Length: 394
Image 1: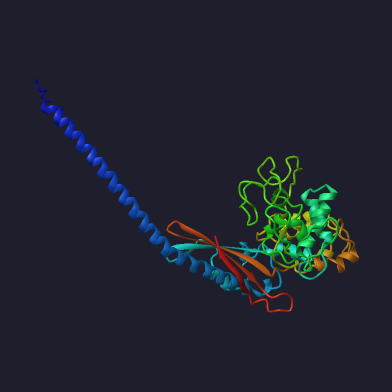
Image 2 (image 1 turned 30 degrees about the vertical axis):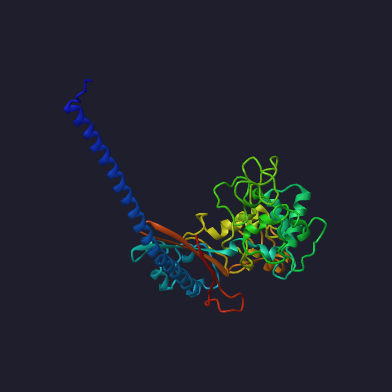
């Protein structure tokens, strides 16, 4: 029997391969331990950052309250886009504004940015739907349906009545086109008619006749998923449309969404911060007149939020006519003089009373956004006593 002698060079080669495999395995093991340790360190650091970021967010809300409450005397009776709180250059005579930078304010290891938005630049959906105890403003709601582009009279009637029913305290249907809990209990999943005020605007997606295309607008794609919008399919028995939103595939295009027109909080529409779209919902207001109101308040450069802005000091200035119009009292394209003098005060104001404060915080690249709803007393109250009525984060 012959035995085969393996050359020493071959044995050395096998040993080298074995050593290399061992080194690779050990390297992978060490790398795995390093990644795991780095993850643990990062998690521990982020836990520490969470508390710091939260206090940065809370203090940001307090700074916003201070800024809004201590406006200079010449700005105290109006709220406008050229004022400092809104990101405009008009600081006024109050030196306190210089002490509160809105963008990239250094805070210890990180920084903070404040974004303050008044809620009255849109219509309060609860006032329009009659959820605050007053009668529904159906003239505003009907104009909103026209601006959105809903031309089907049956759908328009369904949305109008169902919205009023949703906010109606006693829970009874307003008309044949409306809906109460009996209708919603047969959907999948079933739910009850709220019969109360809307707290989150996306509740509109629960209301009979309102699809995501009507809510956001057909052309809106880069928007967050709302609280009442399901993932991966139709929501609340609505079919899927071509673009993945709820609604029928042959649904018409809606150039404007309800989200652009309404807010769940606020008061009368502020003509100094409202968009041309929301101004069009004022009863009797034409599109061209809304555009001229924007032109009037934005000054010679035609841009809101700049030095030459001329915000309205009172709603009587609306009745006084605009450049190119006739004598005061009858604004072309606007409500008749009597309606303008007596009726417009029920819809518009030059002040805002509810503000949404966004606090963008970051520490070493770790970011979190905090939000606060800040409210000041209405007419007759002390406008300098603002309160934070809600605080949350994303």
